Image (cartoon, rainbow, N blue to C red; front, side):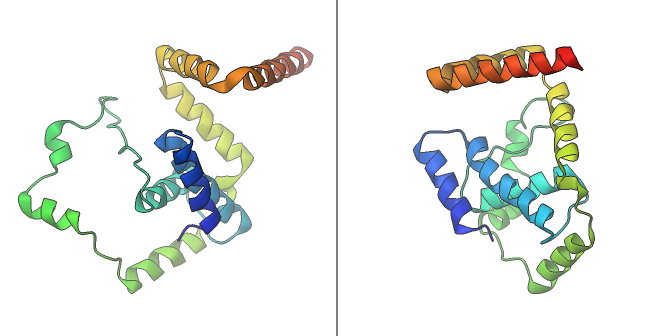
Length: 171
């Protein structure tokens, strides 16, 4: 169950017109914090992120389903419809997870390590995710960031970039 503060932050993001992924980011951030403080572990950074996204979906954030890794395009109409009529009707009314299963999954998570939420692991995951994106996608993201940042944000980003360039020249 997400904290009230997390839900409030996500709602604030929604009011401000931010994207679903930004809203969901609040839940992911909370999950990373849980792993760091030892509430439970995670086998990988992806698992911690997946748990956060799952909680965001349950809280009503309209996070799009994961894109098909093979084709790099979202699922087709047939897949979206999702199998037989019986399966579709079952999926409309989600059942509450049984106590036994919920306890089993939380105990399994407690046995996992905490290094998945380390800065090193998160940085590695970010680079891996960035490599999957095409130059066009990266460029579009940068353009959108420049559009939506505002004057203060752009100047802060420029200062940060200058610091990074200076640091890279030294090392």
